[in-house]
Image (tube, rainbow, N blue to C red; front, side, top):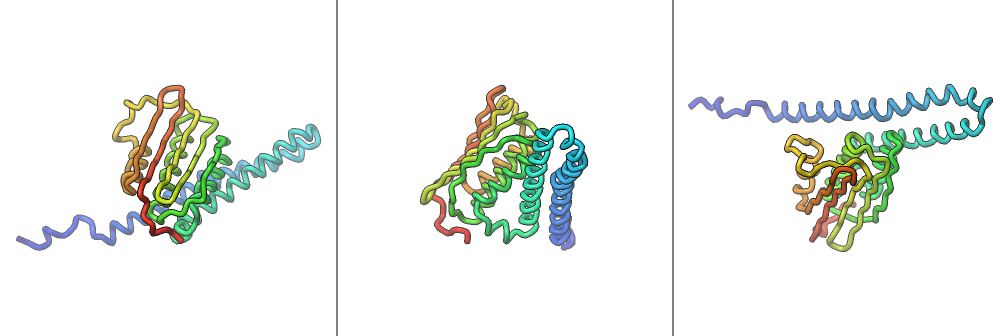
Length: 224
């Protein structure tokens, strides 16, 4: 039989190139949607602050405070995007730092209040990055679907155990309505499964959503 029949449909290099292109496109989109929109909002507020100050200094103070919040959020977004572009930097950052930066970025962009209670857990790099990605995806779901105004991220750990919990006060959903085509939930499931973690998702209409990831017997090899 002709050996060409056994060649892959797409060369490995082409597959890698497509993956890189896809990642760059995603980062460019996030840069435009998050940082770009934030800076645009700041520019609009800056234009009206002098006029507001003459008529209502209290409103002027409020707008200046809003500018501070937006710029802090834009910086947080930039830090996260730069880390995404440098995997080594992402790997070196602590899980508590990654979670805090995510929360700050989402809060500034959406004004959803996000409470963070993250212990300084020392984890293997693969586990740390998986928990970061799960948190990232869970917050994306909060922003896109929950209609929540408050969310909480809690991370606790001991010598060989860790627990991550993301909850919100949004509209919730019927657990039976989760389909296999739900990309966000599928990503969370795959990330948890990839590190051997137990995943528990609880939600119902009008009662918000609670996602808990539990890891037992964490390997002693840890990140730097």
